[in-house]
Image (cartoon, rainbow, N blue to C red; front, side):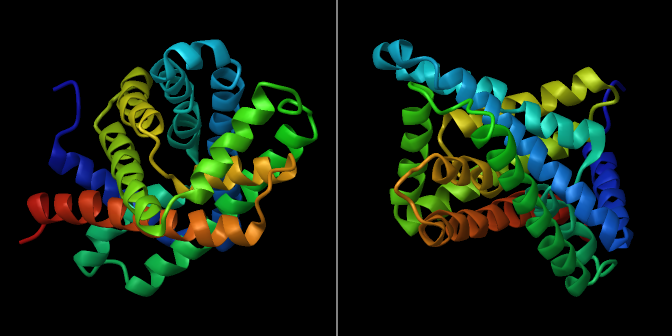
Length: 260
């Protein structure tokens, strides 16, 4: 067989969770910083490409969304293939072994907390050092496009952001889940690209991606405070991401393929 079965995928998920649970805190921090930075690289590239298409956006906004979605998956490809620790992926990885009693709930939340913080630091670092201080977005149409994304993400209702957070991480965790099925790098790239392209093009809310998009806009003078970013977007997106990853992927596949 040219790919791993669903039961074999679950074995890979268990292994990923055990490795993360037993990893020293210092290494977890480094790997989570890298994951945040890698996702931010995808965000930076997506703004660079889609933000430079105002004429196309005016005529066919769907093409601009497709362009943004088409390049953003680079970030998760780096996370999966190079190796890094991403909070949103971990919301699915830990559920099967926790549900089976092989990893404690305390260990799961410890990992989630450390990785979330590391992802935040990595994403904001790229927003500050490689987006703001390089001047990539300081001219139009990129500046206006970046501000528009941040305004849109922080002006939606809590319920809307929460629901979009579910959709985003349902697709993100499916991307990393199906990447376990691939036996080679091209297979992993294909498994990752379609779901990630889809969630970005559909405008769903990924907490770690937003740790880049909105701080980058704040650094570039957007009329958004850090408090507004956290309360209006980051909290509901994170909660939605937890539901999307832990229930719709981690719990349901554990129930089907592992629960006795």
